[in-house]
Length: 200
Image (cartoon, rainbow, N blue to C red; front, side):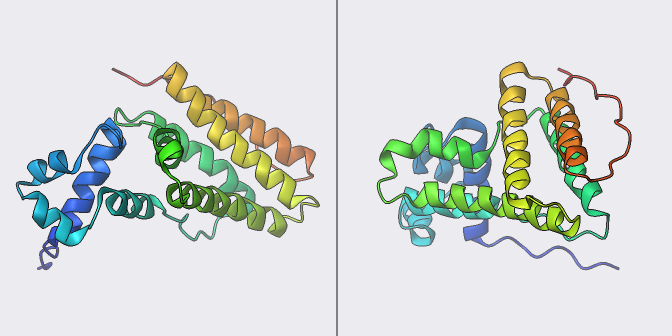
């Protein structure tokens, strides 16, 4: 019989609640009072784990800083699968865009020491370097430049989905990525049909 999952610590509960509320409703719209009330704790208890709202925001962004899982799939397939993953994410009713872009847009003027912006830059660069390393494995001459272009396709598809409420924007970006890869000498398979628009 499988053992039950470990019980969450109070710090984990606070961070999980903050993550959900910050992402769905906005960082500036949610105060520590709201987070504490949602959990059923006092503000003092929250501050025992996170000394300020800024510390909680920083922890939220670090929690969202997830690296792609290692894969044995061919590099080109991994690159194109990025856009399939985006299309699935766009189809979710709780999709609200990139949390790092959202944080910079909301907090940029207040982020005087650039803490949040630097986390966002580090995340975006980690994704670009992931593309670059896969492209180098494929022998692409300008892996740096093409990695930047693929990153722009990712961010552009996110922005287009938010405006249009259309997950097929990820499919369009995938087909653009396919063209870029082919032009760089990478063999890519035939395009698949576009997905359906988000229901509801």
